[in-house]
Each structure stands twice: as structure tokens, then as C-alpha cells.
Image (tube, rainbow, N blue to C red):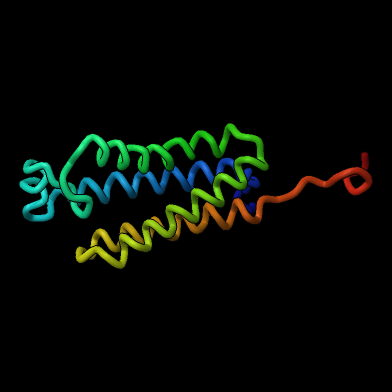
Length: 143
């Protein structure tokens, strides 16, 4: 039986796929969080735990927080490799730390599970960006 075809997936596509997977976990984790008893009542009273009262500033800040990984899907594909590499390392580390803090502070097993998966995904972003393959140069590439 012939072997299955396998292609080498470019790092840019791996990074974009990791960010897309991360975003799906964020969305589903936050959606399932709505089923926690009392969560909707707290939201309707204008409170966003653990941030407190809902204000323009709180909503703007949380919006920025979620926009960053959302646009990382596109930026991972569109930016030049050097810029993309460093941006993925920095943003990946930032969101890994953020999700670690959430994982240790949440009392709900499903949310901890999502946070752990998100930590793995963003850690892989950092790993792939750090190990981004280099092009052969000059004599080494036969030029």
C-alpha cells in the first residue's frame, strides 16, 4: 500500500492555524461560561468578573485583548517573516501567561481545561515562531 501524501506546511500557516484554534477555544470557553449559575444575572447587573463594574474602559480593554489574537491569524500570514516571528513570540508569550493566570484562578473544571489547551496552543505559537526555519544563503544555497 502506498504511503499517504504529506506536504511540508509553512510556518506562517501553522501559526495562523494555531491562532485560529486558540480563538475558537476563547469563544467556546466564554460561551460555556454563560451557563455558570448566576453568571447572566451578574452580567445583567453590569458586573464583569473579575474586572468589576462594566464601563467603557473595561469593555474597550477586553475588546483590545480579544482583537489581538484575532488579528494574529491574519498578521501571521501577511507580515514579513522577521516581524511575524517576533510578534508571534511576544504575543504568544503574553497570552500564554494570561491563560496560566486564568487557569490557576478559575474554579470551574471546563474553564481550566480550556485555559490549559489555550496555554498549549499559544506555547506552540512561541515554539514554532522561535524555531522558524532559516533560508540557505549565498554559497550554501548554490547561488
